[in-house]
Image 1 (cartoon, rainbow, N blue to C red):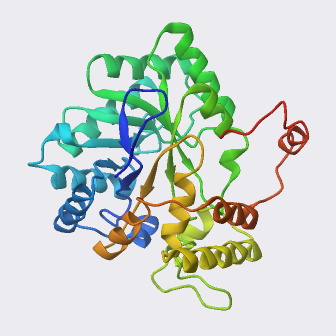
Image 2 (spheres, rainbow, N blue to C red):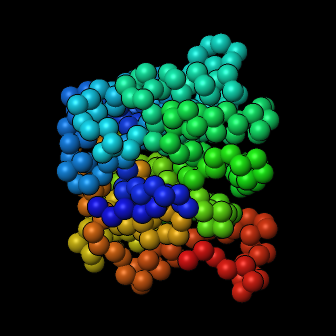
Length: 344
């Protein structure tokens, strides 16, 4: 397993990390992802650790906390310092007025609750699951900095922030000498390249490592979706909740990308998911790509995305198949590319 620095921090993370969204299977959205129990989770963690993957990502809203609880049970008896545990909070975790957001009140309670569910004394990487515009950014960052200082959190990150959300936060941390965000967990795939327009240049400039979520385009790049064929019965895309809340993709573009993936997979002797994941591992600023799996077969296949690389021509063909017109002002800046170079 290859390891990379998480942004400009001193923390080394595996290029593949394991997401626990399939743990528990509670609710319409997460039941469509999977329903891994404790025994199955232990087995999946064994496979990950044998492959050198030791970073495991969760969130308090995954199956209403059950995913963190199952992960906590699965890591029992393992040396804690050999694991990297990542989790997230911000979204609603209860019915009370203050059981949501990034206020001091909610963040302190959310971290303490996550520690109890995970059965650990500290979280290696704690991320805000989304941007909360209500509390002052100073309240959010001073709270997180204090949680780092008391040892409950080791590193800070965010997820699903816009460029100005993240930059304002980083500037505030710098102004007061508070702990900085070193990671941005972002949606990025061959079917979702919006990350490249602003967030990638920001990450390169500010030393923020990207942790990619849904690298297979919300289940569209598993190799099971083809032109003229119905969706697989087990696909998360069959869930109405997933259809309503997930990223939408124009059908012709989806098939154009799948066709290119099929060609490259045939050339390399790899699977479509392995090619899609390997493409991401060659993108600038990417520190780790979160893979998920309902079973051992899926996990083993995804782990096969490392240890080899697509060649430049194959990368270029995938780039061309997945390209979309940039929104303003990025299409305008592209005309001044020699003074606005893209990250490399």
